[in-house]
Length: 517
Image (cartoon, rainbow, N blue to C red; front, side, top):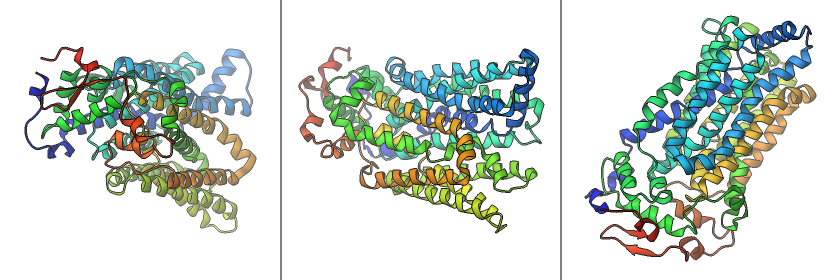
C-alpha cells in the first residue's frame, strides 16, 4: 500500500535542510544558473579582441573593411543574441516541463551547452564570426530554459520554510558565474587575445558535471503526484528529500492543491492570461521580471569596462576594479540567501530596488561633476558597486522565486514562460540599445533606470503580498479579493470527486486509476 511508504513519527523534520536538498540545489544551479551569469559577463573582457577578429575576418572573406559603427552593431548583436536565445528557450519551458518533468528538462537542455561551446571554441580557427553569434544564441536557449526550470524545480521540492533559501541558491550561482568570468578574463589568466575562444567555451565543463550527476536525483514530487498521478514515486521522492519526520502533511497539501485545480493539465499561456483568478499574479510577475532587467543591471554586466572607463578609472586598473565588483556580487548573493527566510521576500525586493534607484541617480550626478571634483570618479564606482549589491541581495533571485510561489501547479509552467519571455526580451533590449542610449543621452540614461527601479519598488509595496512560510494554496487565497473571486472558487471544483485513503489524507479519482499496492 502507498501509505506504508510514509514515515511514522513527528513531522518536525520536514522543515530541516537535508543534504539531498542542498546537493540538488547546488548541482542544478552549478550547471545552469552559473552558466547564465558566466555568459552575461564573459564577453566584457575580450570585447576588443572579438571586435578585432570580426574586422579581420570580414576584411579577409569579403575584401571589404567595415567601419567602426558596423563593428559596434555586430558586437552588440553578439552580446544581445544571447538574450534572443534565452527568449526562445523561455517559450519552450511550458511544453518541456510538462513532458519531461523539471529535473528531466534541466538534464536534457544541458546538451545545448556542448553544441554552443563547440561552435565558439572553433570559431577563430574557422575564421567565422557567425559561429560566435550562433554559439551565443544556443547557449542563450539553454539559459532561457534552465533559468525558469531550476527555480521551479527547487520551489517544488523545498519545504515552505526553506523555499526562500533554496530559491536564491541559483542567484548566488549567477553572481558566482559573473565573478568567475571576470577573474578568468584577467590579462594574467585567459584575458589574452589568443585565449578568447577558450574563455567563451569553458561553459561545457559545468554542464558535464551536471549531466553526469543530476540524473541520480529524484524528480519533483509535485510533478509526480499532481501532473503524473504517481503516488508511489512522489512519496519516494519526498522521502529522498525529507530524510526525517512524517511526510503525510506534504502529501495532503499537494492533494489539497490538486483538488483546487479545475484540470490536472497545465494551462496554456493564453489560458493563463485569460484566467481572472490569477490576473494580479500575472501582472505582478510581469512588473518584477521586466523591472529586474530594465533596472540597469544588464548594462552594468555587459559593459562594465566601458562604464568604468567613462567614469575616469585608469585603463590598467579597470579589470581589477571589475573583478572587485564580482566579489561584491557573490557576497551580496550569499547575504540575500540567508536573509530571505528571516526578513521575507517583500523587504528584500523593496530595499534592493530602492537602493539601486538611488545608486543609478548617483552615477548620473558623479559623472556630470567628475571633471570639477576628482573624487566623483570614486563615487561613480561606489554607485556601480551599490547597484550590483542591491540587485544581488534581492531582485536577482526573488522574481524567479515568487513566480513559482504565486501560481499553483497547473499555471506554473505557463507563468514561467510569460515571465521568462519578458525577462529575456528586456535583457535583449538593454544589451542592444544601451551603447546607443548612452551615446545619445550620456549619463542621463541612468535616470531612466532610476525611475524604473523606484516604480517597481512602489508596486511591490502596495500590490505584492508577503509569501514567506505560506503554502501555494494560501498564497492563491491571498490574491482572491484583489482578483474579485470567492475563496470557494479556489478551494473546490466540480471536476474532481474525492475519496479517502486509510490515514493518508485524500486521493482523487485521477490518482485511483494508477495502481497502488
